[in-house]
Length: 262
Image 1 (tube, rainbow, N blue to C red):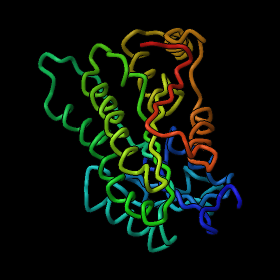
Image 2: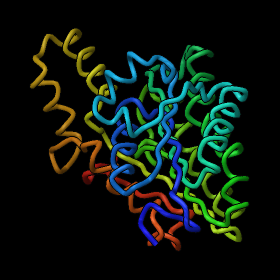
Image 3: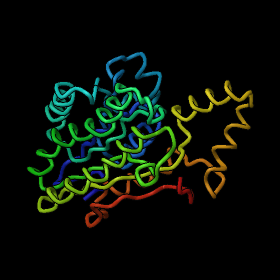
Image 4: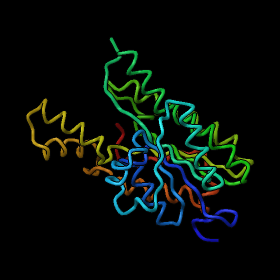
C-alpha cells in the first residue's frame, strides 16, 4: 500500500488555515506523499488570492471557503470534500488567531474570538469529519496547539487558554476514536517564522524603533537554540503523525519548542 493510500484508495486530507503559515506548509508536504489535499480558509473561495498563494501547487491543492466559527460553513466544507473524494481520512486543524490583551479590562470580544476560533473551531471540524473516519476504520487528526498551552504568558490569557483547551479536547477525541482506528495528537510549536509572526515583528519595530533584524533576533533569543522554528519543520512532523507508521501515537502533544519553556 502506498504512503498516500488507505483501504486501497488515495488518502484525503483537510487542512484548515491552509493558505498561510503552518497550514500551508503541511498542505504542501502532504501532497508530496500522494495525499489528496483540500485546504479551507476564509479566503478559500477567492481564486485570485488562492492562485497567488499556491502558485504551481494550485493544480494539486483544492481550496474551499471555510469559516471555522460557523457550523454551517464547517459542515458545508466537509460535505464538499466527501462528495468529491468519498471521505475524509486526515484532518489538520491549523486555523488560529493571536491577539494580546491584559486580563484586567480584557475585551470580551477578544476572549470569545480566541475560544471560538482556536478551540471551538477545531471542535466543529472534528465533529464534522470524525464520523467519516470511523466509518472507514482509519483516521488521523492533528491539532496545532502551542507551547503556550503548557506555559502562561503575560497579556495572552485568551490565546493560552484556547490552546490549552485543545489538549483536553484531543484526549477525549483520542479515546472516542481508539476503537475505530482514529488517532488524535497535537503539535505545540514555539515561535514559528510565519506571516503572523512577521506582523508582530512589524508592530514591535514601530513601537521600539528597532530594525527588523534586531527584533527578529529578540524572538530568536527566547529559544535556547537561538533560532525560529520553520513551518517546514512542523510540516515534517505532521506528515509522520498522519502516516500509517504513527498508528500507536495518540493522545499525545509533541512540542517543537527549540528548547523553550515560555
